[in-house]
Length: 364
Ligand code: GTQ
Ligand code: FE2
Image 1: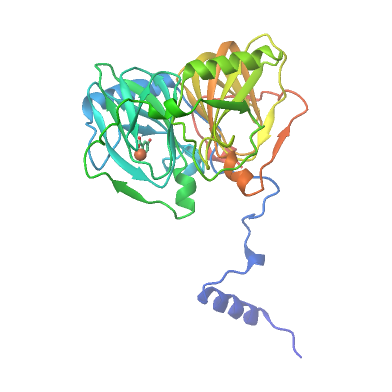
Image 2 (image 1 turned 90 degrees about the vertical axis):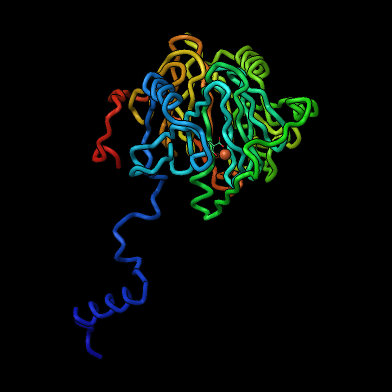
């Protein structure tokens, strides 16, 4: 027996490579990281930047077949130009001008809308026209036909959240245009509200899984607001957080997406920072404050959107009573049995403030 020399080893590597194989022991990129290392970075998109651009787009860009939607998608700078807020989540600002309609279609990714501003728009979901007003949450579950119609003379702006990157990673994206521009609308509007009442749970308490979406397609702001007030009355915590739930099963509103709302109140007992497995996109509905993510301070106000990638330490502070909508992928982590969260012992040390510039070197 002679020892293999380097040239034998080199030949082995060449043959392994030619066979379409890679030896694990030569892969330097750490695959099994001790904790998640999302490529997406904590980031914030100010309303002051997005809103004028959306208005200009209403002036310059029609909503037509092909493009389908007038949407400015949140492109996380850690994702190399991909139009995703985080590795698993699409987030966007959608704008619909007076008397416009966005054509009907359906797709395997599920979507939610959280309305920021405007009136007179309805989203038709499988024939059920859901009237939209600020603070309302509207669901368009996977493979449901949907179109948006503005029946009034004011523009409307809302947040879109989709599980598109997740479904793309699963190679599960299907899309189909509806044969007409719009669906026929059932009479009366808001039929799902005639048969179901909204349901909520304390965030973190939703462990039931359901592959079916909520049969209730709209959760009204008045109901959400009342539930937040009730929760805030039960404790002195600076942050109370609810999750919207499927009234039939108690599960998340969509099988892939959780929707929640946080009320952050000044002058109350601080809550400990928390890391969670899974990505979260936050949308500031009202108020003003800041969020510390992994030691960096992100100041926000109404209309701003920001993202907390998986396992980033998150800590919210309000200057005035504030409400944050939260979209997350926790239901998928739970369904796979990998969900984790961890509270940190005390407040984070703030080492910097978000300025809106991206330097890839500073990210792991
Ligand atoms: O409104 O149907 O932001 O299909 C992205 C894809 C919105 C929508 C988005 C969509 C929609
Ligand atoms: Fe869509």
